[in-house]
Image (cartoon, rainbow, N blue to C red; front, side, top):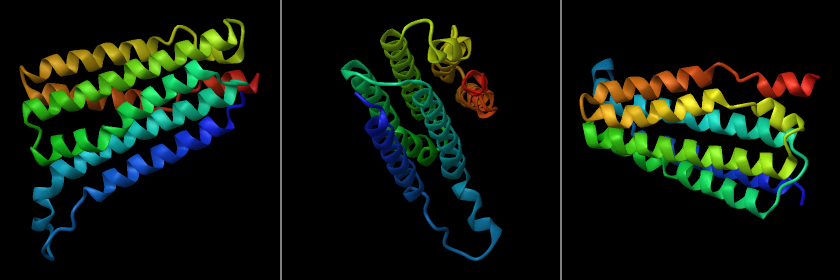
Amino acid sequence: MGKGRVEAFTDGVVAIIITIMVLELKVPHGEDFSTLAPLWPVFFSYVLSFINVGIYWNNLHNMFHTVQRVDGGVLWANLNLLFWLSLMPVTTAFMGENHFAPVPVAVYGVDLVLCAVAYTILVSKLRHLHGADTTFARAVGHDSKGKISLALYIAGVLLTFVNQWIGVAIYVLVALVWFVPDRRFERMIEK
């Protein structure tokens, strides 16, 4: 089956996720900069999550651009990823509203782990459907960046119980690594 509907659906769900996250930001009551200070945890959580959701959207766009078709397994794998991404507004609010307490930071990290696992499953389904000798498979390669990110997320969740700022720092580090555009797909498409 064609890939157009899954791309459109994914774009719509991602747009809704980002909209729900921004609705969690509350307008400060007051006229000076001091009224903004108490809102920094919620705003920082939002920025981190916006970047993470944006990274997944960007990667999904690149992936679906290089594949020709999807099947039922790919559709379910994509829904699995969208499910975990759809929890991002809740885990973001939980972390920000609780000022980065250890349990909320760990819950946020678990959501990141499950998004990364779901993304890995989707990549696997697409590779299986299209074969090893395709633009998609060559672009993904061994996906070292994805595997290292997953390991870092798991470490971040565990280290959060030592100090929650270690977990937050690891989540930020992974986002920064992915924030630099992943040119694997662009290089394959240019060829």
